[in-house]
Amino acid sequence: MPFNDPKFTVVNPSPDVDQSLRSCRLSDWFGAGAISAGSWAYGYYFGKPTRIACANTAMALGLTCASMMLLQNGRARLRGYRENAREVKMYGAWPVQPELRGKEQDARFPIAMGTASPLTRPPLDWRNYD
Image (cartoon, rainbow, N blue to C red):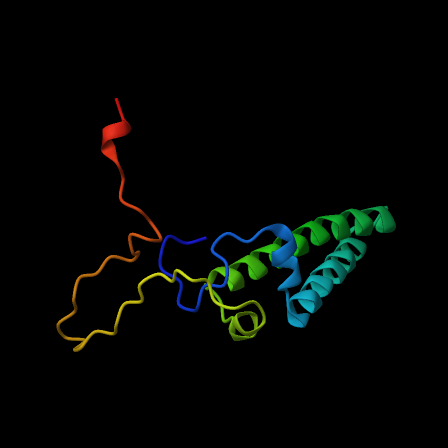
């Protein structure tokens, strides 16, 4: 995940796997199915001598990729990095939200701002290093 402030409301800053899978939408599941089916078709098309074995291996790899995509999308939605209005309505917002920065007044005179608030990326404590 990126080290910048989320653009949407944070539902849970550190969700577990179960909560990430429960927050997946139907489009995420269809995308995972499409990746798995597409990888099987790819393995069948390009695995000339042993088509079924290559297709099944490609589908296993595609299923692994699809499961990682599901977890990544669900986690990003709960952490506020993707659009999450439905999740905010279902689970509620996290009590501590990162500070959202306002828009610049004039694009000709930008204000230098960091990309992350101290809540998202705390400053380094150099006293612990010897």
